[in-house]
Each structure stands twice: as structure tokens, then as C-alpha cells.
Image (tube, rainbow, N blue to C red; front, side, top):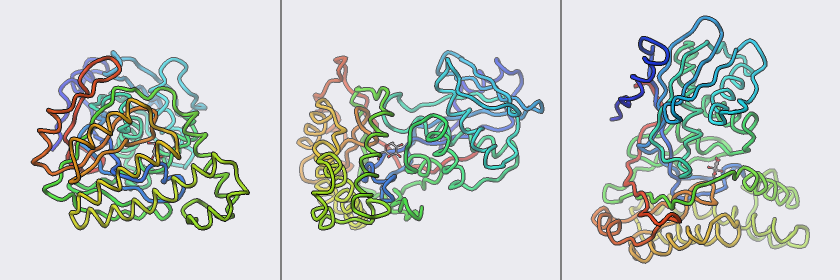
Length: 381
Ligand code: GLA
């Protein structure tokens, strides 16, 4: 059970005076398998995790939003709701807040003015969705303050639009939806076309380990949007609405109609969708060996066909796979170009695997290791 971060209430009082009307939390996520499939209408298998963003919020009646970030030395951004909302030229983190307010207004919601203080525990640059959790937390807070009563899936869609249309990262729905809708003790098989979520219990004897490579994900939006464009080109060449609708036979038959890059990107997505469904069955059966093998194949596909891993991440994954052996597995998780690796293994093996890992980050440090629980999605504290 999460509690309110001690410095959050203190920072709120210091900056705004008095206390908040409410405090909300929205978790980060780890994706077990199903990478770059969400914006291809495919399948993903994430869990919400215990690291999270918290927002302390109080209504204002002057149509202004003031937001301060305790984790950025109290940096502040403020904007009016009755004027065009534009990006903050000096505080890029605030664009997730501005973007959320802008898309909510554009969708016709009566967004209230607010004082907001933000704090979080998600390691920065780890690829565990700190930005999605910030947007979802702000949406949840504004919904509560304004009595809007927005459903989790609605907040997720708005947060995705904020990131795509306002921030400019044309992401899929996975991160926002799992942050809004996670279920404690479960991963969710998400059908990113229908947005149906099927909860799959995490077997009690399975540990979920997250290792932060220390390779921070820098300005990756350009690479990400380029991958998305390649997938859309491949889908168009195949004559399907999205790569979700294609199989390997169709792809092979259309090889001459697309460039080699689009072909490889599409092969990753098509095979990754199949692996994600197979992994869901393996998890349901408690079959960690099969799950691990599918994760290993996913990593190879991200490395060779989707070209989103880095040599340091490949080395970390290889070492984890060797330490874990056949009863589990490891792969990079998230958008790529750095960030975290996810591993599954019997609970009894986790301490030894963590202790034996010799990987060092590019700065020469031992990596941060989290043993995570699947947690509930966003809500009031
Ligand atoms: C990022 C995006 C998600 C998803 C993953 C890759 O986290 O925000 O929508 O595409 O990358 O699976």
C-alpha cells in the first residue's frame, strides 16, 4: 500500500500555503513482452509497478494552473486555461501537465484551475514510463478536483493524446493504459485495438526483476516516430489497416513491395504479437521456461529486426539470461535505446541472481535493481 511521499506535503505547503484537497498516485510500468506492438493495434503484457508519480492538488478559482516539481528543485510552470496553452520553453517536464490540460479542454471537459505539486520515485531515463505516469496522475487529479469522474481508460486516452499531440512523441496506448488500469497481483494482456484488458495473475513463485542499465534514454522521440512510420509504411504495402492484421506469409509475399528496413520492422511486430499471446499462455500455466524462451526471442527481434537495443543492454540481458538459466528469462523492456531490462525467475533465485550480476553501468556503477510487485493503477491516496 503506497503512502504519501513525505516531502510532497511539505513542498506543497511551502509553495502554496496550507494543504492539498487531494493527493493522487499513478504508477510506472514494466512490460513483460510485446514491444512496439501497441501502435500497430497489437498485444502487450505489462504490469503497473510500485514506483510512481504522486500529485498533491488543490482547486483554484482563477482559471490558472500552477505546477511545481519537487524533483526538479521546486521548478515551477504556470499557465492560464482561458488562453491558448503552449509548451513551456524552459521546463520540458511541465509539457506533460500543459498537454494534459490542453487535450482535456479540447475534449470539452471543464478543467478546473489548480495548484499542483509533483513528486515521484521512478528512476529517470529508466524507460519505466515516468512521463506517462505524470500525465495520468495529472489527469486523475484534475478529474478529481473538477468532479469530472473520468474513467481510467478515458484518462489513458487523453494522456496518450497529450504525449502525441502536445509533446510530439507519437506513442501507443500501453503506458498510459496500464498506469491508469493496472490490477494488483496481475499483468494485463491488452488488446491495443479494442483496449480489452485481460488480467493474468502473476504466479506466486515468480519474481519480476528490473535492472536499470544506466544507459539513459535521451531524446529518442525521433527514433521512435521513425519506427512508427516504417510500420505504417509496411502495413500500407501489405494492404492492411495495421500490422496486427498481417502474418509472416503475407509479409514474405510482399517482400518486393517494401524496403528492407520496413520488412525487418514489420517482421518484429508480427512475430512479437505471436510471442505475446504465447507468453500469456505460458504465464497462465506458470511455465517460466517457455516464458523465458519467448522473452529471449523478443530481445533478439528487438536487436536485429527493430534495431532498438544498445551493446550495453545486450550484454546485460546476456548476463542475466546466463545467471537465470532455463527457469526464466530476460529482455529489454520499453521503447528502447537504453533504459531497463526485465527478468523473470523463480522467487528463490532472485537474491542470488542480483548478488552475482557483474554488469556495470556506463558510469562504472552497480546497476539499480528492483524486485517488483504488480500494483494497482492510478487513484486517490
Ligand atoms: C514507449 C511507448 C509505448 C510503447 C513502447 C514500446 O514506452 O510510450 O506506447 O510503444 O515504447 O513498446
